[in-house]
Image 1 (cartoon, one colour):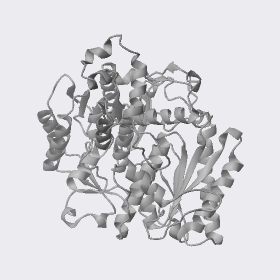
Image 2: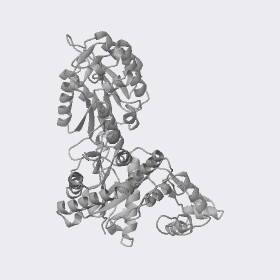
Image 3: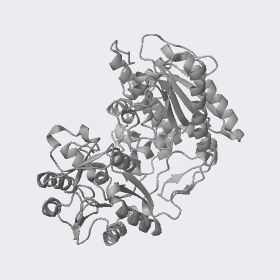
Image 4: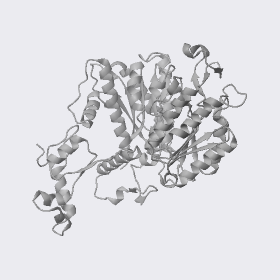
Length: 574
């Protein structure tokens, strides 16, 4: 029995029910048209995220998740009483966004989510986008929005969320909105069908690991050489423009497990953060790379500059500084000796907290195309201060090395040194050969075949099973099991601790669940301990250990008693 893939069509049904109906119908029609396989059947589900007072109970021919159901699901996840929306609209929107996020992440963990689409104005886009962004890269996600042509970073962040311009306000179906919504539905459906019907290429074949690299226009020659060399060595490379968002995106992919090594060649975002430029990182720069303990080669590309917009947008207190007009929209300001000391302190403070393999490579003849003899930002004192401070402040150890080279950052010799340093620490780090690659989303086979895994050991050592291994199990039980296992795998991939707690009675299980444990563990020795015997009794041939655990499970663990409720049918629960 396979799992039916679902796409969620989300919006505020109290104000945009007609538009949701039309969008859902268009998605369903496009899915049917585009699908070449009867196995690629997808159910369209409307999800109500209304933050107002009006309740909507149904939606015609489509399966409909009411606001009450969404809030109930969310309240159960946080272990509280049913949540009532406050009168304050801002607070209500925030709660609905969190409820939607929990709902769609659970659907993804259960292996049923094929994509999410929604529509809204500024408020609706804000509500939907924070939830959609929580889905992994590769899961189709699209919002038809009235703010799609404005400043979209707050909505998109570092995700692959698509904002589709609505052209007119989302207020009724007319000659323009009909075309826009139909096109959005077709685009979204194409993503979904492509995800379901095309075999996902293995990211492991011929790849040692995936490497993130930061680049700027003024460090492009260096990055090009590094990129080509790494590809020849069998690495997959992902290059990020160091514009503030670029660094955040790279670190987001590190957090999700897509990137297993980093060559942070262009750290210019630190300069913008410290001085106040427009392409800044934030205070968490480098944190996830260090937390994940992946190999890191770091350099100081473009720390000679701070980025601003057009010249007239540069703050007045900087107007007398050395300015270079990069183009009509971008102005660059040369950094000073004192500022470079601050950059070095920021970087050193981060690296000194790390226990992973790190090499800092310093180019002594300049850090960008503009920082070279007879170029606008050539300032040996400022650059020298940066390099000297880093050498002074970074704590050298077996795992953290600082190397200075008599080259410019864009010299081929320096690029070669970067690659050699990276390959050296990778050879000492298990990430290079054994860290499993993380797929961007569940493969089409998983969704279409209902997780019909064969029993084998994967490259990461995970044992997977086929339903044929459990002929007496109900299909829905197997599906739930796979969903639970996927949630645990997701936690592992994010570096989160999985907490298990033993329980011999229902009251213990009750408080463990309230405390937020991931696993409730039953030991057969618990039966003997409750009878006043020692734990050693569980190891002696007194009884069938498996039978004891199954019997205890009926007494200790909760049993589902219908939709949205938990049964109190176990010993000592109350």
